Length: 175
Image 1 (spheres, rainbow, N blue to C red):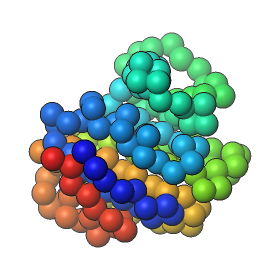
Image 2: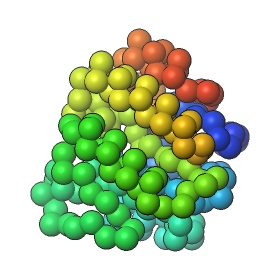
Image 3: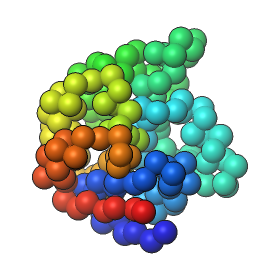
Image 4: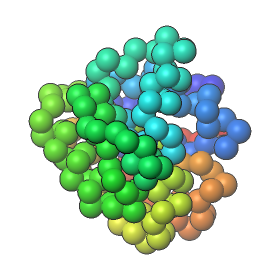
């Protein structure tokens, strides 16, 4: 698998479901500077950290925003490595927590990795996810960060995918 993520650009990575689990660690390896924010809507931050550790991928400079753990009923509290969102339906809360992290951390030249739109669409209406993504892409540009947004190909309405493609700088399909 070969792909190029451009610095200070927003890239939509569209992948097949069968490539999802093996693609995420490779994306982290390709991110410039490896300093940034990883927003997860599919797995707990703990599971992702364990997956990165098994593959010996460094993540010391990554802060996680976890939208999964609290909604699954896990007793977790914010810590220096992870911020938790109470409910994946609260796109405003997710946006505020991301903005606060960017404001409080020195992420110059860093990244925001969003895993994934498909997860958000489990809890939110398509139009709301489109609006959130449009706003989010604008913020990533204003923060001068590298943005990577993941979408699982067959889990998103093609019309929504087309709309979101218009918000990003690059779209890459990984088969």
